[in-house]
Image (cartoon, rainbow, N blue to C red):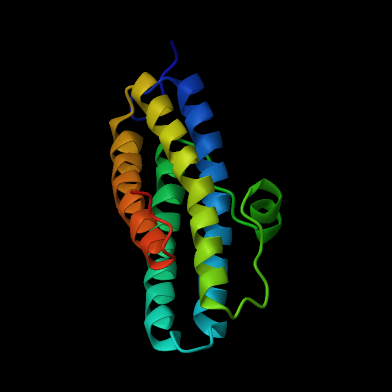
Length: 160
């Protein structure tokens, strides 16, 4: 089997890079939506949510860089145009959202796209013996499961 520069199978690395590019595209839309919520939120929870949305987009920006660098490490090119992001992403653009509960609902919908992709990547990485991607996805999943729980609690949607 042909190997890439870090000793992983080229075919498996190509499959991982393709799925990582899908994740990258979705993170870009997630980032931009959170940024828009941060800018446009209004109402009595403004101060609380303004800060929370900034935390979300700051975290997403770090993850965007990590994902792109992982794609490069695997020997492939990360997507890098908004045209590609919009085309590849399952997360859709959120425009003119000012209501906090609606914004949080859209954040949770975004995690509903990101988390399954990350779990799929975790499985693919395990099959490829790709500990780098595996560790990255494991960290993301752990963080996001807690975030989903917290935002769901904010909306009063946690199941007992």
